[in-house]
Image 1 (tube, helix red, strand yellow):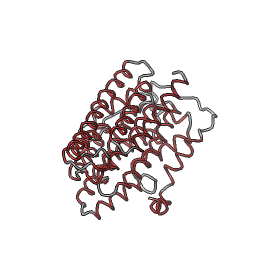
Image 2: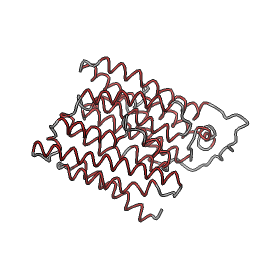
Image 3: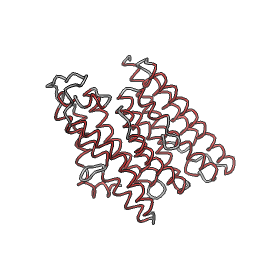
Image 4: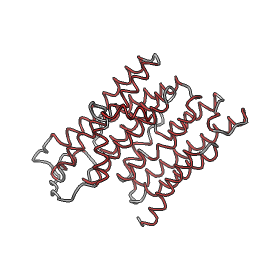
Length: 346
């Protein structure tokens, strides 16, 4: 793609995200979401492959439906209360419609079907944007409306997302689809705590974004898209693959890595709110996603491919690792000891 065009689309993405996050009026928030949707479409379909065009079409249709629901929810609320302010969403029907719209935007169960397909049809860099930056505006809207939302509905959506995100990822061989189901599972953890402690949701999202960025950029460096090529990628950059192993375990939420911090804090908060049953259930369901993270980690660094493999081993290059990947990997692996400082900031 033309560099100037890419610059315009990336700038539009930043603009749309900033408008939604910083707005108080529902129409401005809706405008930001629309700018985001239109800016990402060319980045999804830039390869002109039929699967990429299909992904862009699916993305457009679901996001357009979700944006229409956001608009409908805000208009219903304005009709009943006379308020267009985002924080003044008080009408129960509006809250219900908004929760459905945001769930569709994020890819929460039962509105999750579009996300793995879209991620599979997109390049890795666009997949990274879809999994991180594009999720920030809807989560910001949830954050601003969190006092009005229905806790029982969000808890149900969250537990279903964690269950289906883990369960449907078990059988996948395409890494982008595995990461999509991983994203759905993580969104479940964010959704369950948004009503009780919204700041924890934001902390979870930031750490999830850092860990996912590490994995996507590493895979982009080694040019790996499926498990069979992941098995032979260790010859290309052994040290980077070792770091990928640790980053995957961090994303799974194993101590003493960074990914354990948000899970620990969320379980602690749920227990304080007398939701020990929900905390136990969501912890047990996260074991499903742990299985496919371990499978990815096993393929990354522990197995040697069989001699009958159809893939040639890659030549090892002496090209140094990207500084961005190095910084992100360090944060992904080593942030847990800094938990007390992070908690004073949050």
